[in-house]
Image 1 (cartoon, helix red, strand yellow):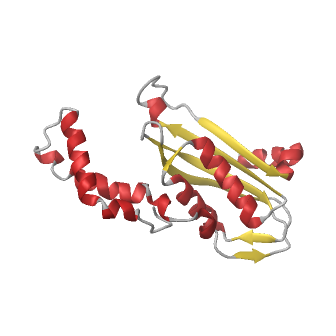
Image 2 (cartoon, helix red, strand yellow):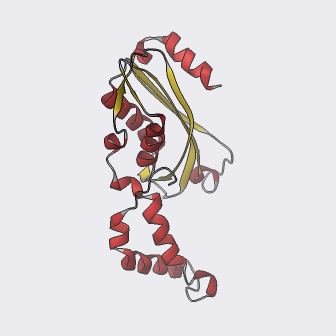
Image 3 (tube, one colour):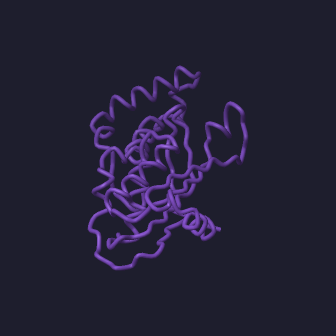
Length: 195
């Protein structure tokens, strides 16, 4: 994770056991676990797990850090925050972009905090719908804005590379809180500014 140096400590603590299990999975799917290309695979997979499951190590509310008193009460949009996650149903990757809009009510957060929040929420076994709601709920709780809207785009390998094999299909989810829920003009402004 570029913006956060969290590592999953439980993976590190259980490194040897995880490596043994990865080696056994390789054997069970028909691989020769002693061939040159696979000798270091269990260790590489375990190191990867430390990183891609690092979201378990942080409290998402804490990564928002300090908020600033600012009397700006117009729409703020942070768009195209890239994320990578793992589907909890198949442990297959999914990835895409997060777009956040909020209407401050006297408090703002540093822009990098939004990327940190996305990283912490997505770096664990997830579903896109939960990612969308969690981001909206945390921003609503921490910033106490007039309203929040979150749109998440995702491409899911469990849908593209297996099963129905619908390559390039996109899943789009949204969550609205506060004034975004009741004000269709505000929602439309946010969505138009995403284009």
